[in-house]
Length: 334
Image (cartoon, rainbow, N blue to C red; front, top):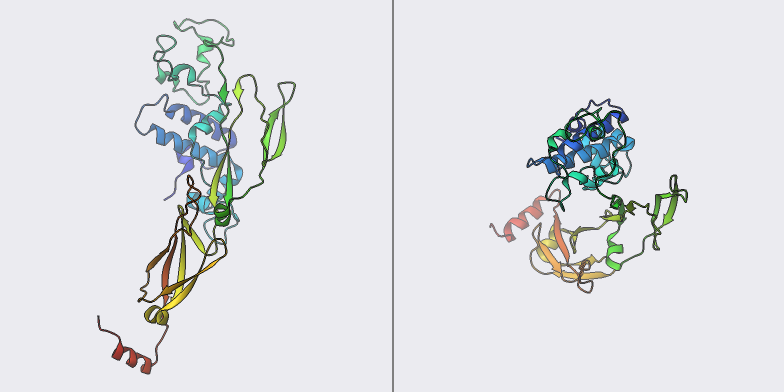
């Protein structure tokens, strides 16, 4: 059974956008690994990020409501699904989701930075961060002194430490490539739409970039520009399947060819055809390996994996009595 994203965030299926944001904010603060030291906190934190990633996006949420998690990740559940070629894969970094939600910074850094072994002031308990979803989890420090006495009207707190630059969360894009492009190498053109800071330092504009050159990235005084991360995904191929640097090919031969021998023409990724003699009896599932006809090794491009040929045997649907009798006479019993 697939994941129940609504249950993970603790909201009903009819929750609106604000309710989804409030639920993510509350749950993410509760299970953030910097605060929650339970063994399952990291996995729970990741589930919460994935649930928010789906439910905060109208298209993903619509597909999830119709087909569930499995249908969302396989493109609508069936070949006739209305989702077309859309396939969802969570980018896998819940901390990027968290940082993006809180404006590119980690609200726990001031209390839980690994470079400091002591808390910045005594009496602070991480469990004090468990607050109602409608309450500002950090606002209390502006209303009360750390000795518990009221300071009067709320005012913006002065920073305890000099502001440090933080890097924006990575921008993740999925890039589909064919096996031929992996084999030969290629240059891809990608149009990326980014928000960039205007000269006034306050407003932003959207700008398109075609990525086959170095992108100029803007930075504010307190942030480092985000990296752009391309996640390579294999396109489905008509003839081959990929297994690391090896390429798998299924060869279909007749029963006569399997028993009497044959030569099978095996296509390669670069368009050649290799004759493969088969003189022994070929059983269904027999595998033969063509060395060095696969994909390049990532760290040693001059070396390649193998082209692995798996044989499938096509059996006849029926036999005549005469053929059956001949086979009985000539084929071994075991």
